Length: 189
View 1: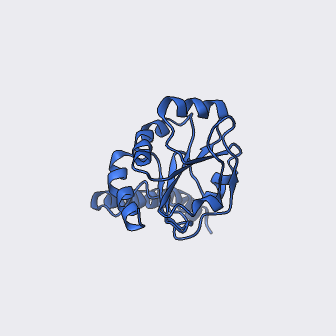
View 2: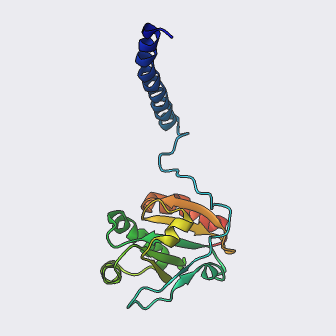
View 3: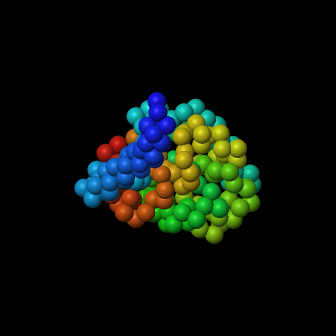
């Protein structure tokens, strides 16, 4: 290969990469425009499967029982599993929606993620406690098994403990009245 050909290839390679990136960005914008691209739609391999086996110890100094995979069944209705932390600002945003679900009698099973027990207890004392059971995941191992990307993250499980829906990010009033209300009706709440 001649030096001139090599120079042309070296010049063309970055242009090709830029063109592919531009095409991908254009496709994303087009999908946002027509509704076929959901930037929050992070896929989960667990949807349609039973929750992974886990045992999360109770919050130290708390008054709720611990949480394990065997606890996800037996409520006779769908449950919500919510990963949260006191240091998580979006968790504050979603907390009123969790409290509303709690007042409606929906079982919410919490997993406190990489948090200090005193901070978690203070958060619940300040904002209210929507949880029926509350386990802790100080090492983050349970979150890894569930495929959690970050907190807050929530899952709707049917009465058999099968994961039917996953939401990465805070549950907003729109998500509560749209997705979650529909799922709870669909799976027997």
